[in-house]
Amino acid sequence: MTDEAELAEKPPARPLPKPINALYVFLGGSAVVLSNISAIVTHVDEIREFVTKYLGLSGLFRAHEMAVATTTVGAMLGYGLLLYWVFQSFVRMRRTREVVAFLLVGALGFPIVGFLGFQTIKPISVDDLMQTEARDLTALAFSQQELAEPYLGGIRFSQNGTAADAQPWTTAQVLYGVLNAQPDVQKQAREIRMALEYIEANRDPASGWGYMAGSKKGVTEINSWVILANLASLRVDTNHRIWRTDETRLVVTRLERDIAELASRQHDDGGWAPIGGTTNPRHVRTYCTLMAVWALVEARNNSLLSGKSTWKYDQAIKNGVRWLLKNRQTSRAGVSGWWPNPHTVNQNGSFVGLTAHTLYVLQRAKEEFPFLVANDDLAAARGDFLQTALYGGGGRKGLGERPIEQNDRPHDADRYLHGVDDFQAESSTFLWYPWSLAAAVAMMDDPTLSEKERKDAKRLVKILLRRSGALAKFVQADEAVYPTAEALFAIGLYLRSEQAHPQ
Image (tube, rainbow, N blue to C red; front, side, top):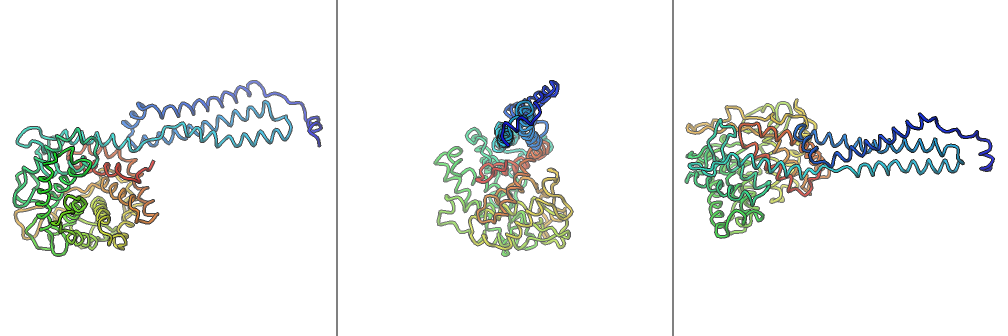
């Protein structure tokens, strides 16, 4: 049948009724306008700041997802309505080949319009958000610094005045967090030097640093944090912004002294106790051991120390790593990980923060010691952690739903060392969020892991970053300052990560 015959058989085209015609134009145009408004909103920084302030970072992500949906769907809906109006008004009574051509071209336009709509959205820069959070947390931490004697340079334990005394432990943690987050080391150089000098001035000559300034019994984990803080001040990217060239040798000498004292505390089984001078294996604790191993690993990573003939701590690190791997346990509920006192039989609950911290340290050790690359115990520990963190286990939900403030503390019985009457260990709270983020980032960046492990780790990082707004609220409200320090460290680790781009 010819086109002329086909046209002759069709009834004459009747235009759409004016109200229907106008309705299509109005709805299509409204959808396009709404799509454009939604896209424009994402470019207004003031709106983003308002949403972040009142709904948190997770609320910003939800609002962004709604904007993406509104923009792309609105653009495609508006295009479809206008396309239908054009078809009904001008095309439906034309030749078959013209109708088919119009429909084909029109159908191809849907993905193009959707893509163009999506491209108008301003993406969320997680890096920018984390850098802003790092600057805010740094300001919060240094607002607790003493600026007058007798505690000049020290950081107070409490930000609300309940326990306002400065202490070396909190000071060292804050310094390590700030130096790793690096929001603006140049501007903070004076405060950092003051804090490091405060720490050195409060060292007990025989055993290092205790829980408070003036303590005569140095504590292993505090000595380790001080070593970490001094090491961070010597990194290539920070050294000459904090120390003069002629001062670097002095800092190295202090580190050599403190590292030797720390290594001397190691027990024959490879673990560390909270204090020196003890050989009782039942005094060994997980946190002391992981902190000592971490400090030695970071010292090995610094060429000013490990490049010298006096370096002799590789075996101490290996023995500490083997102790940690050997003392991973499984609770009554079937959850695997680490507990504060490994000598307790039939562990209860789970210590997510301590487990994540241990895994982070083991991942750092793996970068220095190849024997850990194919270690079955470490691989099993990683797999169990990622599974539990993502999906839950042992009666607990995954970390995407766990309250930020739900952290674990050791039992009071773990504070006591049998036969030691003049010392009780601090009943520290192990924060789960910063160390889970740190462990996940370390795994995500590890090229020796399987593709599935790196994918799971990256997914966990994305989940945790979306909750960083809740973290900020938690550390601002918490009485202690050390949550701010540990949050700074984890955020800094993410910002330096090569693979951390979860948006």
